[in-house]
Image 1: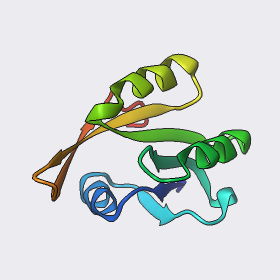
Image 2: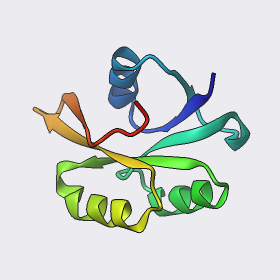
Image 3: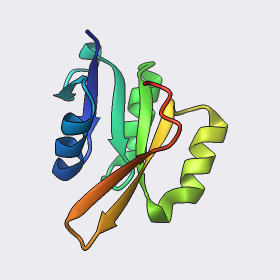
Length: 104
């Protein structure tokens, strides 16, 4: 089974593992993953995105409510496989809404 690499916050990792029946791994070696979920809020997002894109790894970007403009740009550019929209509720809970999640 293909593994999905995660470069996202811990709360989102927990929710994804509960919701989806896939093998998720902390990503350190690109060869293990054909798909990576990458959080737009990480400090080195641009470098991480460019690295995975250059390695031919499909990228799903986890975007926040304030990143909808970037989400449209990613989807139109065909550089990312898809986007997942995240809403933070009361600073604790994270709800994931799957933008047409083509993987499923």
